Image (cartoon, rainbow, N blue to C red):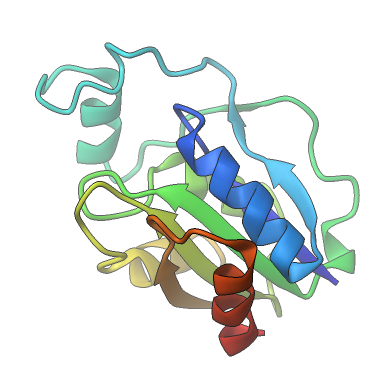
Length: 157
């Protein structure tokens, strides 16, 4: 089975996640921070904003709120989607991966971004999912229709 797990601080990535999950025929799970991000928290121009501080600290693990996935073992493939922050996945994605046993799973990264690509995201997340295969998928900016995403998903699963 396939799971689409996503983090969306502003709601833009959520819309893409819904299209991705539909195209993949997967279950969907939203990674919700225990404390939602405010506009001030996301101000990348402020070096003291919450997101800036978290991204500077590679050991940062923002807490996740809401319900956990009841049975992660039923998924063999996880489509992991998030916005790119400072050229990588937000550290809450490390929190998510470390919350479950990901050994033996194939994790495909997809992202949204205003300008940068996936960069070293797969390598940086690998430490949080020992035994999993993590690969960079694609950027899903301005993807348009579900048909286009279906073509992209089919390349990886």
